[in-house]
Length: 124
Image (cartoon, rainbow, N blue to C red; front, side, top):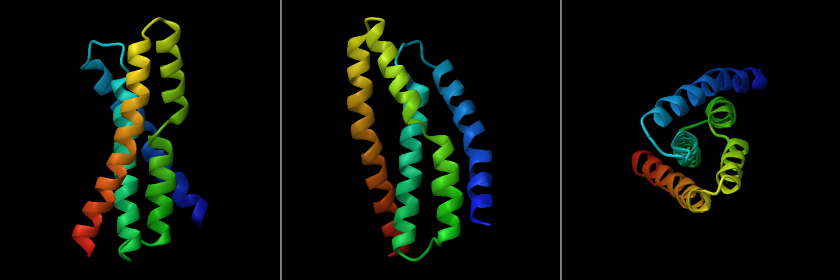
């Protein structure tokens, strides 16, 4: 049963990642990977909300598998983040590569902390 929850979440998360990435990136005329940045930060926010809800007893293990492991696992992408950062550096866009790393490392955990705080405010 648990693996079905993960699969169900991934079935939604993978196309959501692709569609969000394409939609966001098409709105920016920049080499910066805004699409990947957006899905990664959104995934961190969702995981933060889920973690806060779980700590408050409002989200059980099934919801954690469905949303945390399945949806967010397929939505977020460390490999694409790494690849795009490397490609930026290799093509001479080193400032964008560095900005991608710094922004992702700050915004991802920041979004997770915001998610936890929001969940605590709602379920405390």
